[in-house]
Amino acid sequence: MKSRKIYIVILFLVMFIITGCSNGTEVENDDIFGSYAYYECIYLANWSSSTIDNQTGLHKNKYFYEITSDKLSIHDEENNLIESFENIEYISVEIDKDLDGVFSFGLEDIFDSMLKRYDIYVGDNRIGYSIFIENDKIYLADTTYTGPGRNIFAIWSLFELKIQ
Image (cartoon, rainbow, N blue to C red; front, side):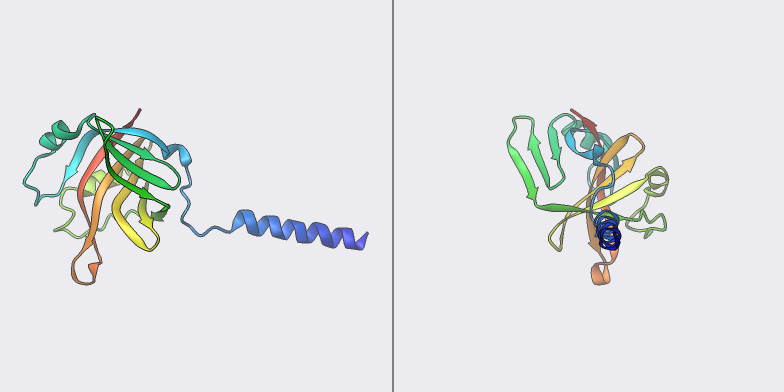
């Protein structure tokens, strides 16, 4: 009887460790996984030579995104592969609302409504995309780190995706 209690305690501890420990890289809500189309540009860096309306017109329903637990692929309207990243990890990052003024002009109000941010990595390398979640909307951001020590988060563009 005593060995059965020890076995149950050990089993409980193993289950607790397996289910309770996480490396923090998993996406908490796999509802983001799916097929999407570029819908609308909502932010464009102030140093861009384009406009939000122009970007939306150039890309809306012309670029398609497949987001899975381990892959991000981008295709054009003729299904030509534009970019593909495999063995990716989604790293949950706190949305910093105290952004650098030069590299985030106009993002403050947008970030107020965002709930989650995931930077996308292959191994130790950021691939230059982040996913933002706002209630029932999903956004993909073309991102970089810049500045001395590459410690300033900058967004080139932020666009809404629509499920296909």
